[in-house]
Image 1: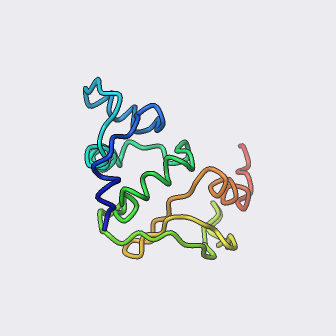
Image 2: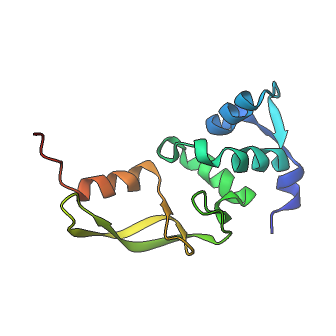
Length: 132
């Protein structure tokens, strides 16, 4: 359950760049929004968020609002923060396991949301493609 104090408090958009952009694109000129409005904007803009650019502080805010309990890919409520060994597939079809990858995992569809450092770990585990 979301903290009622957090949901009713006013939050400065300038502290959360992704939220500020979502608010601007929705047409608001507000500089502060309550938690309910923040959560609505995040939910409405899930498909437009570039997750690798979201700061740790903003992800923590999203998590506190309850956003990460909803998968942006399948819409199911049930995303959990966890550290797991995660398997990815190279371009040649070979599997690669990235050990102890911390992210927000959807137990329904298997999607994982990573911050930029963890995303870079996945990219580093994959060899660069040969240029033809």
